[in-house]
Image (tube, one colour):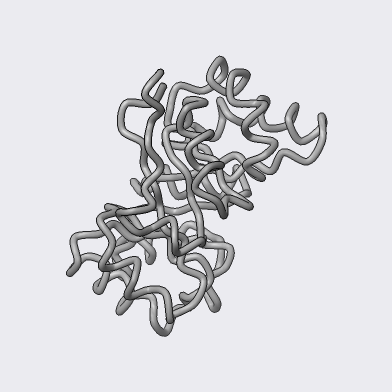
Length: 193
């Protein structure tokens, strides 16, 4: 089982950003709220609150996918980590020194096969398996192929399910369900494990 279970709030609209900033969680995924016009301000706000800012480079309006774009994310916008589904782009971000999280959609056996082929080349810092209901069943095979942190995401909207994912051995979850960000709703390890 994971030693320190991490919950990463996924901020999808500006109304929930303040809640994420006030939470006890160390990292925030600026999911769909950032574009090149407000990204520096949002990452600065995260840093002022002692949080690391994670961005999905594929969803940042006005940003390209070349090496210069990743250098800008690191140097001009001061993001701490990049998340994305394209292994080539994740490799580029990693090469310039950004922390990386590779999104792996568990769609079918072909997507699973391609993930295992790409994981050695991509060398991400962490992997996000989605949707969480499928990730639950595939954690063990990913643990054999990947030694970094493994997160579950997608449709995690109940405390009971978050607790199951923790007991299963995930390093953490990413969720936009605000009720799970609150200290009183923190997923707990069961007494038996």
